[in-house]
Amino acid sequence: MEWLIFLLVAAAVVAGVFWAKKHFRQEIERAKRINRANKNK
Image 1 (cartoon, rainbow, N blue to C red):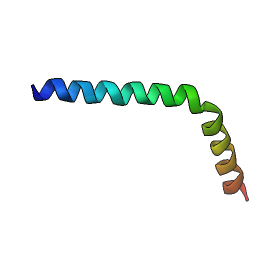
Image 2 (image 1 turned 60 degrees about the horizontal axis):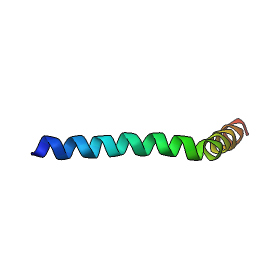
Image 3 (image 1 turned 90 degrees about the horizontal axis):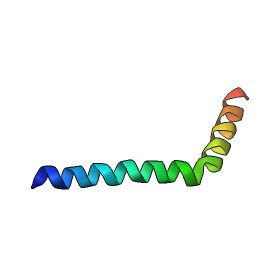
Image 4 (image 1 turned 180 degrees about the vertical axis):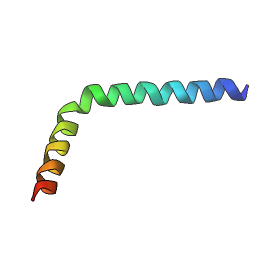
């Protein structure tokens, strides 16, 4: 039974990552650009 719960949690995490990538790509790209600009200063 534990492995089934682990499997469900793992699947939820993977699905969450894919969902976040789809919905927050612009914000992630903007944050990367800002971080690069700050490092170049």
